Length: 135
Image 1: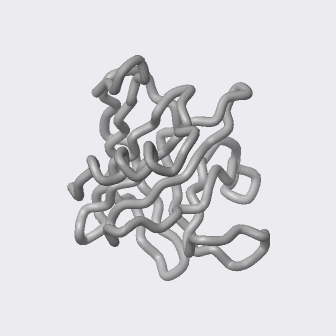
Image 2: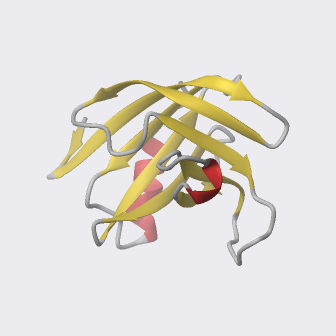
């Protein structure tokens, strides 16, 4: 998928384990590029340990030997659609937009990674979010 000169790398994950306070997902495939995340990711409940606002869950990468030291990437910020969220990841000095699309049963998760791109204004972000759909 490509928008203008922005490459969107799609990551498809399937649920690996669901517990009360977090769910882990395993990567099934990457479309339109190479993996920008990790093979296993976690969506966990936000427990108020930072000053973040506008979300109830965090997105974390399994990038080390345990989850506590893994990269806590972003909060999943709300949209008008209960299955679509957005966030960002600063990687190699660039801010990258992430759009999260959950299936209705939350067993499948698509993460669209807008490499090197984060919208400069809310209107562009709203258009991108409106263009997304549930899995």
